[in-house]
Amino acid sequence: MNEAVEELYSLLIPLHESRLIVPRACIAEVVGFTRPSAVPEDAPDWFVGTLDWNGRQLPVVSFEAAAGQEVPEGSGRTRVVVFHAMAGQLQPPFFGMLTQGFPQLVRVNPDVLTPDDEVFAADGPIICRIRMINELPLIPDLECLERMILSVTASA
Image (cartoon, rainbow, N blue to C red; front, side):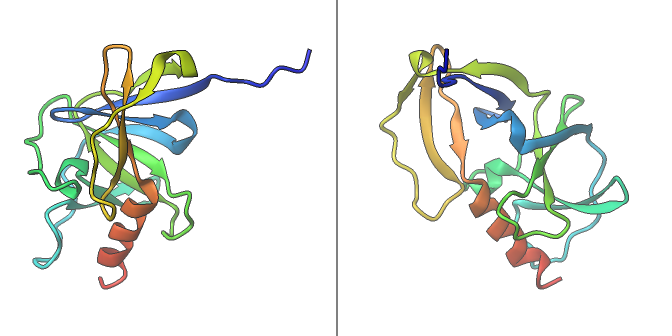
């Protein structure tokens, strides 16, 4: 009985007006929001600062702003999702992303997924959007986000 696993544990990450979907293995932790450190004046809007996380300085981004929207207002539900920086570009190999609540664990399989036709900028942080039952989550380009963060933190 040697069947291929066709199911992936994933997280739906709530943003201001949409959600992201990422494999569960991409996430190290979800922490409460605290005001990040001040950022240099020339930093882009999407780079919201750094947080002290487990004795490390964790760069934190707004996905919405990185995708060309405005940074959403914080609320009592705002959290920071700590991602593993899997492309190996950041040291330490983690970064944070502002969210509007706790991620929701979902099991994803081919029966519930279909691609969406929306086209996104080739050099932006969005790979594509998918249709998943009643959801239209975005698949983020985490390597692109790492490169974006590196462009800010390397010059600091």
